[in-house]
Length: 363
Image (cartoon, rainbow, N blue to C red; front, side):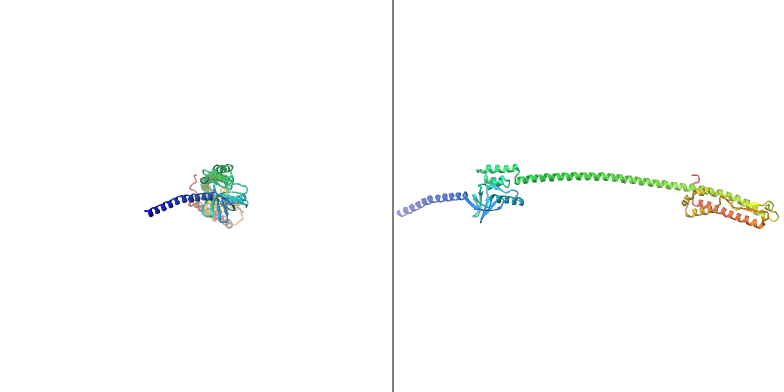
């Protein structure tokens, strides 16, 4: 029993010792951790980016702020340059807020002029407040006020937003202007197309009028052709009547001279022989420019017919002492020429009929 009591007493004392010493160690460890979390350490730093410093192997992220415009590399380089100037190549005093491993810490740092770097970046509009980190701390209101002040003044990223908004406005204005110009262009094309189509309509109308005029002109020329053919045909027929009368007279004279039993009259007083009949050509002379409408063959026949006509005929004086044979020969030649003219007249009249040029005589 004494041995059992001894062991129980030893065990009880051991438990009391553990209860006494373990809490002291845990409390001491917590106190140590608390002191490490908020200890002030001086670092000689280099600026890595817009919110990161480095001192040797230690990487220091500025506490209480967040990056703005993560993808704007030029903007981040500008912030880094401003932050390097603010650090000024001197040591900074950092209050460590938290650790992530041995060499990664998040700290609130001040420069040699005792300016809070996080607050400086907020005031310049180069960072935004990390509301999760500063919530409930004494820095919450100063940091938020600094951010709002920078936004209202249009500094840093907020100025870039203003430029962006201005750019958006300019882009919108450009699009509106482009739309306006495109609308004007389309309207101009519409009006141009309207006037072009109207012009084409006028051209078509003019062409139709020209065709109508050409048709009317052709009809007039055809009518004129028939009229000219009719009056030339009438003149040829009138000449034919004169030729018939001429032949009637001189064929009788030739027959009387050929009768040797009858004494010729010219041997008593003499006579004058008309070698050609008196024929007209005034209609032909007034319409020579219209003969082409008859066709080449008929026009040639008409021209050759009128080429044989003399407006002033030739005359031969027969004296009483002229031999009968010579007088007969002169009259015979005149009669033969007149007969040829009569035949040509018949052919010409027949040509007008064959070419259907006298069917409109009554027009």
